[in-house]
Image (cartoon, each protein chain N blue to C red):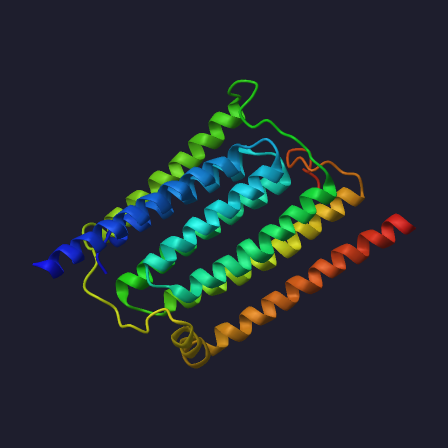
Length: 184
Length: 102
């Protein structure tokens, strides 16, 4: 009896954490696309990434949650903030001036995309997407991810490193090219 | 694990993808378009991890990590382009950047 009470309390706690994470995730996503100042949009993206990391923890993906916070909030958003500070504030009021045909078309296209996703997932997996029992205790831990990455998916790991190297070389070439243009 | 079904996570991922797509289509500032692109990539990641949990399969989490690496590369090249545009004193409005020739 006592164990049942504890279990249902834990269940309610998971639900509360999930609801808070989901609403802050969607709310900060709306904030990202609504702020007129891109600096605030980048700051709202940090909230979005943090609430997504909470949801990854609920899905027992500890390593991905840690990587999310380190890579996205630690590196990507800081890069964004540096570049926004470098190019200076360029305000753009997204919802002003009344609805133009462009805005209506964009909203219609995004809504159609959402409907398409919902219909595709619903037809593919209607009713089968419920939890079925526990996963192993090691699921999602760094040791498990490392073993899966370096034993089963070694080629993907190597290709990822090549992609990152090519992107870094591309960034350097973009910077060097424009410097020569400006100097000459 | 007790708590919400995987379907709830996938629903959040779908709505997040829709919000990101709306941002990409509706905003004209290049930086905000890149930020909205990050939202779409993260929605894909959330769906991948939720379904990896559902099928008890590690490949979804591995793919999510690969998506993170691709997002980092995209930010590297995209922000490099933004800085290059800014150095040439071009506008950062995506509507005015309609020609490949600067």
